[in-house]
Amino acid sequence: MTSTFKTAFLLALLTLAFIYLGNVFGDRAGMTIALGIALVMNAGAYWYSDKLVLKMYKAKEVTPESAPELCRIVTDVAAGAGIPTPRVYVIPSATPNAFATGRNPENAALAVTQGITQLLEPNELKGVIAHEIGHITNRDILIGSVAATLAGAIGYLASMAQWALIFGGFGGRSNNRGGGIGALALLILAPIMALIVQMSISRAREYKADETSARLTGEPLVLATALKKISLGNERVPMRTEPATAHMFIMNPLKGGLAGLFSTHPPVEERIARLERMAYGSIG
Image (tube, rainbow, N blue to C red; front, side):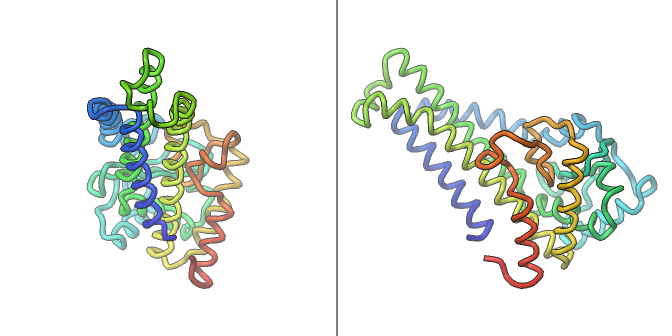
């Protein structure tokens, strides 16, 4: 299953889950309220996340005069991808990492840490930059916002249904749909499953960005080598990161916990293996 098809399938699954949950526990008004709340919150994040996250990590914008090699790489890769050159920022952190943000290619920003510029060779840094520009060209910020809106709406709808259950049921809608125990189980499981699907979409977009990097540079193994170095660097010098922004980075800076189902990134070993298969053959 390709990353694009998988993303479309998972987004459709979230949509169907929201509709089903609304039919079981809510009415049209309840669904509208839940979706409206999620839309408002995620629309704000979509439009202003670039300014907020760059400020959060104290990123400083650089120019071709202050960072000539970095800006040259970004300009070259952006031109190859057919998009305007993103604004370039450097984060004052020794941990090797990078992310892209912005609501579209015309309003994009790309940030790298000081650590990654010191750790990687120029061709490896180019592979990382191409991965981040892949997120921009693939509209991953928009896709992530849609997934977050649907998952959030499911969570809000489940929460509203919980309060309805406490104060006298669901207006008769759930009486013929498995009884109170079944309804309660669905209320608990639906938001968890929605979050798992949302994380799966994030992982699919990471694979897609890796593929885009390989296509733009023509060197899948270069990004594979860079990922190995970045992974080791994150273990040696952990980065203090807000969990809400962890999904943006090329390497998940958070360790421990439920690193499987709820991880925003695929295992680095699998990403490297896929890039190696791209270099030596085709991937399934």
